[in-house]
Length: 329
Image 1 (tube, rainbow, N blue to C red):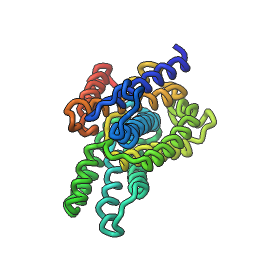
Image 2: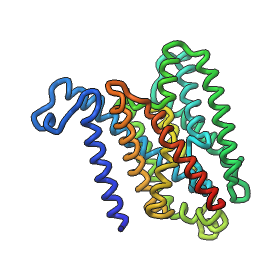
Image 3: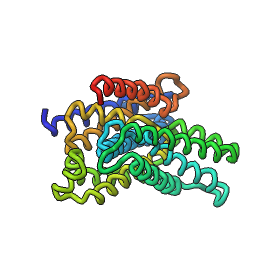
Image 4: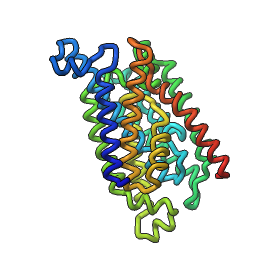
């Protein structure tokens, strides 16, 4: 199957899932309704709730999947995922700091303020994990995962400390947001995330050949004429931006950056020329499908999508660990 055919196939699947998801929810919208004309209530639900939510799910899924690809290329290990190594927790801490402290200091909290703080903390955590786990061009997987556990614990403790001094309104907002939620998204948030995601995807797609070289090791990459240090900084910045802004807008949604790149890599191999765009489409498909499921299982209520992804991703991660043990990696 050619790369164009693969892209076309996933694009068709994504559009199909988005159309099906648009029809499902506490207010059902059938294709007949679209043909005969939507009522005022249906039109409001469609344009102000359903469409923004599905577009946000696609953008977040694409961004988190590609951030997983970027971190796995940086660490040269398929287990490097934003949630597992603490990047998502760091981003969450940055966003909670703005919600709690910003609300006390200057009142209204804006999405760009949360995004900037989340990006800064995600970047710090990414750099810290890299410095801890990587030595002489080699990444110690056990050390990477243990460092992620430690950073998750510290970030969780600091987040809990901030929650303990928050107001009731801030507390409800933070707890609901930490479980991951696509409800209440706005077109302003979509515009922010869309522009950031497209920029980061463009940067990483431009780096597809250096990333392929990096898989062979830093020395090999250097001998091929690529600036390794500059490459690292660009990869860390792009992945931190993708994770930070996504976490700031919809909360913590884990395992997308682990599951999608792994499945795409099994399909097309490790070539980043295909891995990056196909992972973006795969991440969008996964999260739009998960949101569809979250809205359909317990109608008229909904499951927090972060919890649903944890239920799906946890067993997947365990299977990956068992597989690596069997092959002796």
